[in-house]
Image (cartoon, rainbow, N blue to C red; front, top):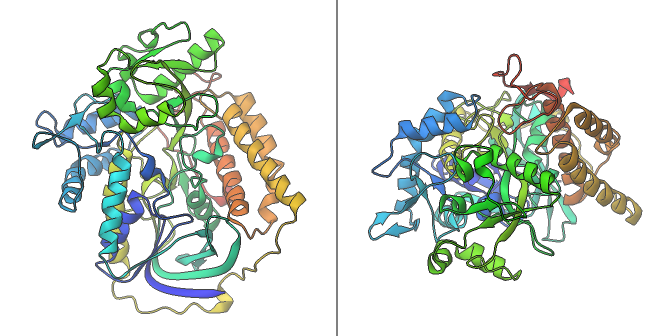
Length: 528
C-alpha cells in the first residue's frame, strides 16, 4: 500500500473543499483528493446563483429572517447568523480573485428567487454561477504551490486511532473506468470532509453521479454523529422529457416570472400558497406532486413564454441551449417538469467551525450539518454556505494542529485493508441491479410524500441488502453502493423517528408538527 503524508487532507473539490484548501495552504501542506476530475461536483452544476446581502435594498438581518422562515423553525440561529454576516466578505474576496458576476452597467446585478424578500441573488453568465465559482477557486488553488491535487481517488474509510482522525484509505484508479489499480493511505494531521451530498440515493435527482453520500457514510462508520438526515430537499422543477437528462431548471426562472401550470395548462400554485411560484421549495414540490396525482400526469409545465425571448436567451443561456437539444424552445414552448432529489439538509454534525465529534475531523458544505438550513434550505444559500463554512473549517483545522509535531502511526494501530479480488461478472451484475433497485425504492417509499407504512417497507427491503457491508470492493462503483445503502438506511431511519411533518419531511400519517418537533434527530453507528 502506498502511503502519503501531509499536514492537511481535504476530501472533495467543490466550493467548500476548495475554499478550505485555500485557507489551509497558509498553514502547511495540503492534499485535495477527489474521486473524479476536480470539476465534477454539485458546485459545477449550480445554476441559480449565490445569495448574499450586498445590494442597496438588502440587509444581513433580512437575509437572516428569510433563511429562518424557509427553514420552518429548525434552523440553528447561530449558524444562520454566521452565514449571512460573513457571506459578504467571502463574495467580495471572490470578486478580488477574478469572479465575473453579472452586472447592470458597473453595479452587480441581483435577482430574486423563491422565499427571498429582497433581490439578493448574484449570478454569473446568466445561469452558470457554480461553474464560475469553481473556475475562480481552482485558479486560485493553482497559484498555491503547497496544494497537491489527486484525482480519481475514492475514499474507502477514515483512519481513526484513539478517537483521532489521521487521514483516509482510498482507492486510486487510472481514470474514468473506475477500476481500482492502487490502494493508498493518506495520513494527515487534520482532515476535512467536503464530499457533497447524496442525491444519487434517489432514482430521480439533479445531482451528478459522484453524489453518492460517501463522506456521510465513511464518517458514520468511523463513529461520527450525523444529524437531520430525514430532511432531503427535492427541487420542484427538473426537466421531464424522453431521453433528456434530469436537468435542473433554475429557481431563478420562477424568480423572473415563470408560471407553473398543470397538464390542462391551468396555473395552480395560488391554490397551495399565497406566494404562489415563489413559495419555499418544499411547498412547491408537494404542490406539483399533488397536481400530478390529481390530473394523472407524470409532470406539470413551467411557462416562461410571456417574457421577451431575447431576455430569456440572455438570462438563461445554458438552460435555453440544453432544452433546445431536446426540441424544446423555452421562449415558445411549455417545459415539462417534475421534482427530483436535490440537496441534503442533514449530514455530519459539526459546530460553527466544522468540527465533528471525532478529534481532527472536520466537515463543510453539503456533507455537513451545522443546522444552518433547518428543515428546508433557502434557495441559493448552498454556495454561500460552502464558501463561509469551508473557510471556517480550514481556519479551525489549521489552529487545531498548532504545535503538533510529526506523528507516526504504528502499523499495528491501523486497519489492515487488503485489495479484494475482482468481482466476477455475475456479482457485478447483481450489484448493479441492487443499485438500481435501491434508488427506485428510495424514490418511491422515502420521497417527497412519506408515510409510516412505506417507510417501514423501505427499511425492511434495505435491511435485506446489509450483507453488502461485509463485502470488499475494488471498484468505485462497489464502494459507492456500500455508501448509498448506508445513507439510504440513515435517511429512512430518521424519517421513521420524526413522527410529524416539518419542512421537507412530510408524512401523511403525521401531518402536524407533532410533539417535541424542534428537536434535531441525531444518529451514530451504535444506534442502527
